[in-house]
Length: 260
Image 1 (cartoon, rainbow, N blue to C red):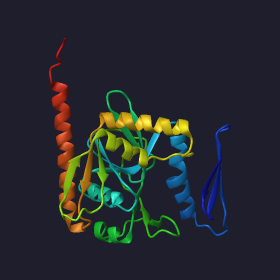
Image 2: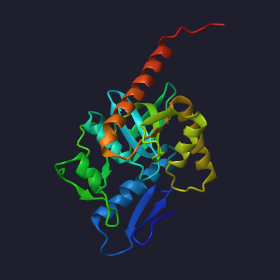
Image 3: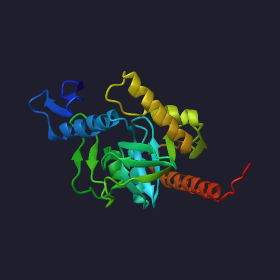
Image 4: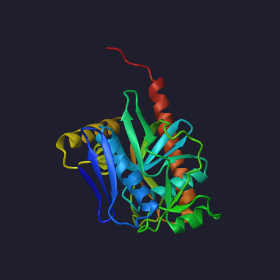
């Protein structure tokens, strides 16, 4: 099957012999644009095609506990994850992650270490331009940075919560509210990667995997004004949410089991 990056790159994917061939469609395509196609577009879809649930979001961790920042492009996942990193969290990736329900809970791992920011976020969060910064692609006003964290790229962490980023709601408040499992499930499906979106068997698998995650991990809607000066409040709320989830989990584990 073909995966096209219109007028720039094409990939031929053979499910039979498990090979991938990438062909630039223009002679002067930049290395950054080609890397963007392979890492950000093709690679997550290939992993999802193997049957894994791969979602578009950022993965940050504190200690052994991780949270997923989920939401549509442009809502600030990378900016918030970079701000959390500046507050001492580990940034594992800001683009794609694999979620696996292993019975006791859900583990999460970044598909690859990544951090990509617009110039205004770079200016606010990194007063000194980081070394090794490069354009994400020729047509994007975004730069790729080395996250700079020593975490193993293959590291898996226990996912404790999913935060679904919303747009500004006009209240100028930093607020979080619980999501129903159904709402979280559909958000995970909507943000999932697929090599062939119209494959019914694969779609059924993604729905089942998302349902299992939503039944195990709590989800929250996170709304806040897109004001850099308010980011410390958002970070505090994210930390408090993770603390509350962790406390509830410990209480559930310590609760006596009622026998019939």
